[in-house]
Image (cartoon, rainbow, N blue to C red; front, top):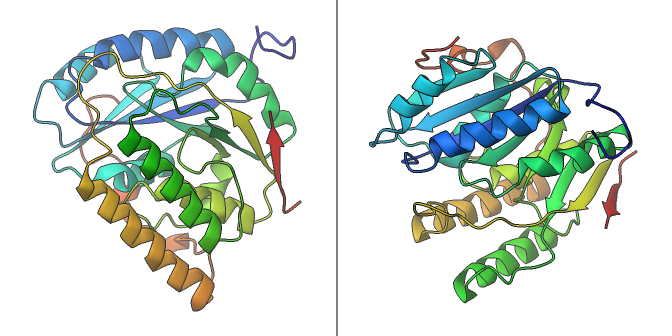
Length: 272
């Protein structure tokens, strides 16, 4: 039951997930995600991008997906990072709304019951965390610096840019996803705002990883993100290159299908 009293979300839903060496969590992730999505939505799909894993992530994912036609697995031979995963997953989404998650489930899909009704009022939703107690000092510094830099350089002022987001699939017919780092999450929000989407902010609770090792906080990923932030600030703000830059008929074929698969008003509002 949704928070607004409806039995199911009235539109269809795609969850895009990037997985890199997640054999310890992948089956638990699928079990929970299938259960939670089925509880709130009649028409859903999961697109999982196996981002060059060297363990049994792909094997276990394909084995689970054999029993669920709603699950599609895209296997990438090399690790492309979050930008490449989101680009591939979002462009291949087939449902009305798209959101992203991680295998360690930083966003608890049980919360979909109260999150989805907000899409009756906003075209896009962005989550923010008010409690950073679970972060170590290094993670807190990264979060604060990243958020502050994006808020300073770009016109969209939100409480966070890189947690869970919900966007209509139609957005990806109007834009080209350009980033290759974790900045891609902020890129989607900036482009949605540029196109006039009403963006609602929702407070979400962080769920710490229970198994395995987090992959996103290393210096390599930080440098990639910083590079993208300054690059797109220069292109969009200084040079004033159009932010909405669709592929149109020139969209690469590699974005229309998996590399390999075994299964086939301009304002930002806050919701406390």
